[in-house]
Image (cartoon, rainbow, N blue to C red):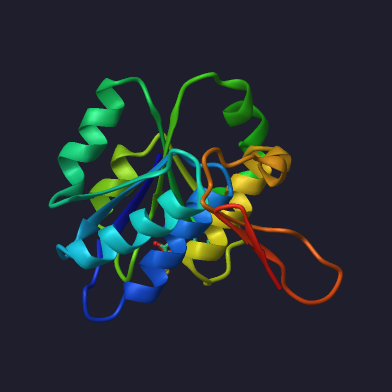
Amino acid sequence: VVLRLGHRRARDKRATTHVGLAARALGADRIIITGDKDEALVDSIQRVADRWGGDFKVEFRAKWEPAIDEFKEAGYEIIHLTMYGLPFQTRLAKIRKSTRDKLIIVGGEKVPGEVYQAADYNLSVTSQPHSEIAALAVFLDNFFGGEELEKEFSRARIRVVPQERGKRVLEAGISSA
Ligand code: SAM
């Protein structure tokens, strides 16, 4: 499960959408968005997810604190991605070995100090500033060891037929070029 903190309705529409779509494409089951309430955004990510198949779920929660508590109580490992954390590659083997479910937290502009305290791991994807989308993508790819690249999305109403050049899409059984 991915927890996206601090969504700002006016500024983060595109970034939060991309966090959601990257999470889905790269093997996560669910995204929880906190911050400004933005039903249109939640609906729009969910619509894309449903159309392209699989069981990915999108939800909004007003507060992040109870969400983290709930996942902790359910036995999840809490992994917060931040450029200030320890290099993720130094903890990856331990995290992959553990069979516990994971809550992966990515932030927005400013992450409250309590998140660092609540996390089991504060991990960086390089100690350089970049983005929640890049950090999540690199972490998920390493966590799943590349296997997520082969993931099948059940009941897809649309899918790409990979081409060396050009575009081919199958939509509800109809092929279009
Ligand atoms: N100062 C912030 C930080 O704590 O990483 C950078 C804010 S950045 C705009 C938004 C989010 O991107 C962060 O909360 C974090 O989840 C992610 N992020 C950015 N750079 C990262 C890095 N090098 N490693 C891991 N996560 C990063």
